[in-house]
Image (cartoon, rainbow, N blue to C red; front, top):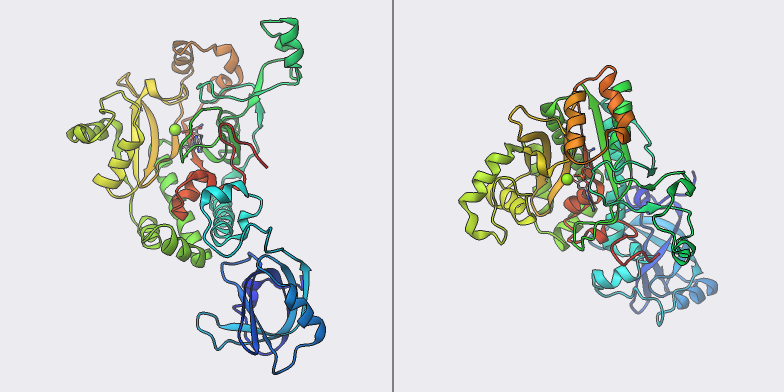
Amino acid sequence: MKMQQIKDIIVSNPDGREITIYGWVRTKRETKNLTFLQINDGSCFASIQLTFDAEKGIDAATAGELKKITTGASVKATGKLVPSPASGQAVEVETSSLTVLGEAPADTYPLQKKNHSFEFLREIAHLRARTNTFGAVARVRNQAAYAIHTFFQEHGFNFLNTPIITSSDTEGAGEMFQVTTLDLDKLAKEGKAPVDYSQDFFGKHASLTVSGQLEAETYATAVSRVYTFGPTFRAENSNTTRHLAEFWMVEPEAAFFDLNDNMDLAEEFLQFILKWVLEKCADDLQFFDSRIQNGLVDMLKTVAASDFVRLTYTEAITELEKNADVFEFKPYWGCDLQSEHEKYLTEKIYKCPVILTDYPKEIKAFYMKQNDDGKTVRAMDVLVPGLGEIIGGSEREENLEKLENRIRELGLNPDDYWWYLDLRRFGTVPHSGFGLGFERLILYITGMGNIRDVIPYPRTPKFAEF
Ligand code: 4AD
Ligand code: MG
């Protein structure tokens, strides 16, 4: 490709050669003889400066175009790339010609140069990527995705595409969005209840997937190591800064891995991503450090280089009980950990990521490997400061009888899981996996406070605009 982006131009040698710049105007500044435009194309955090010098002469066409320039206008400019005398930028463009590709009228363009609240920017999510913050989030998200694929490809994991429409509830939590082509209005008018799903498109009740795990297990027990990276859906009515109804999940699944291998994988994986983004998005992270969360870069560097703390759920409860008075929700053995508990462990006690294992079976999904104590399962959650759970996973129950019994115990029907149980009938092996919430990862890396601001178009209860 001949066309160069600003990210490459600003690090190239300012040797006076002629270049062409495309982008959107961030600011326009004028002195007596000089006009300066900051142009950003989103390829990197920095903008490039175009200078126009009246003393050296500006042609009539360009002078006319300059009059049209406002914040947000799109332009094409040509000129010479030269060293910049200004501080904070190595190069600038001595501009000889400018064309306005699209104007952005100052009285209607909503992104004028001032600080906008994230709440306001959510209402104009189609334009917010043109701001410093959301451009940086977009680039970090992209590099994190690249890191994820790179890590797994380098470790023998096969990228697997699991179905988005499914008839199985992996987590058994009943938080699924129904998929149907039945005319519900018509059925309601006809008073037809219960609904006959054999007449529906798939001939049965179908939903959007909450997780690709069960299908991933079928491939892990064939090609040994797989990972999914795709959209998942939860119809949970959680209006928090950490929950979305549609989010992206990364789910590795590996045959012959026990829980310790699984923990090692999760730790190495997270650290790989952090190092990658620290290297590839240094300017963006510096911005988040100075504007969103002080000390972010040092924190990420430390986490990338030090071991995570590992302890059992039971040990964690003992620790929490010692400080029971600080919690709104009193911790006790058997309780599902609340966000305040997770925060206390990671922020107050250990001050680093913590991997909790061996949770009570009652608060975990049916597929987790049962411990001999009859009470706990080989679950693991990775908790991080500021956020809580970022990864959830487990070693899987590979024993057919135990798995069938657990399914029955939970009031589920083993027949519905016939293909999943086949994996235990034929050549069963120990295997493990986990799910990383991609948006939780981006929250953690950027220090952003609300999960709605790290996905381009958030879907949450009562909100599906754009
Ligand atoms: O803990 P979860 O529910 O685990 C599973 O779905 C397993 N099937 C994963 C596996 O073992 N293959 O979800 C995994 C992660 C959570 O740790 C969290 O980071 C994220 O997915 N997550 C959400 N992220 C945003 N919004 C939501 N509503 C989320 N629910 C879970
Ligand atoms: Mg979980």
